[in-house]
Length: 463
Image (cartoon, rainbow, N blue to C red; front, side, top):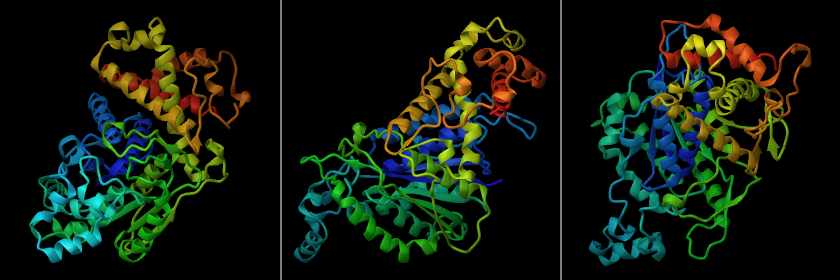
């Protein structure tokens, strides 16, 4: 099987990567042998980037304790995520300088200085770039053109193999994503002969998603970012993409929304931490669509849609294919998370716990503590999507809710299937029944994940 390299550009790229990680943890299908994320963002302290890299590392730590082969039933954390660059990032050199110093304005002759002042405003020239390009793709197109010469990019090229694929995630209405995507694509399709595997890169299957405006920012006189420019920037970029980008991508995806919320106007650094959004989840699904389908030489353009124009989406509002991809794995992981949070530590006297050797000591293991941290992030992700605009609320998000099998919004319980005990008692009953699938030769971590995957699989089939 092939590798899938995902270039996540800017804050939106990192947030889409976060959604993808939670989808993979829940067992959403991915046909690639492994995922290799590569983040491109000059904002070294960007809050969204830092959060995503922490989630990726947590996923890796959990998966490292698990084993997978062709007979493994468990799908939680099945897809391997590999890091080839430090902290999943390509280092952007000299991004701590003012833009005028980066382009060495002072050393230019008067003619070139005059030309530069026509292309870049005074604010552009005086801007520091340590928090990104503040919605200015004209600056980004100059600074980001360096990454093709970086050691990190050379490492990527050296590891690229026949049948590997590349996917690029970026927004179209900011600075980093809007400038980084066309530059990266150009450096792939016109890969330097000095790079290893340059011919493979030139001919590789490349998919990309360009995220149109789906949120705004509040007015701030001290910020260079102004939401009134988002649409005009998008229109200009789309015109360029039509002639200068679409034909170089095997499959191009577009997504956006006219229902949106204004966030705090943070230009970057640690304060840029946007709440999770359904558009980011849908964008992550574009990555999986590209990974799971065959790709032809014919250029395709795809868009994402929902069946019902709801301001707060639940599973029935989704297209049938989308629902089929998301419903089962997300519902299973949701139930898994609820049980661990509310019941697990109180059920060590149950038969399944005794058979697997689960007790209070297991709660203190590095594996379980890491899983608990990851699941806390998963829950926050669901809560933020639910409260955003447009919202995505597939579940009742009350940790203390005991009616756990009535917590999948919009999908009523098939009461004809229910006999005997309900709720957590039914969950425990199915955990005990799932012992028939237990493989005693495996590690306790594998057996623990296996039994919860098999149990939630059986429970969801009753929905």
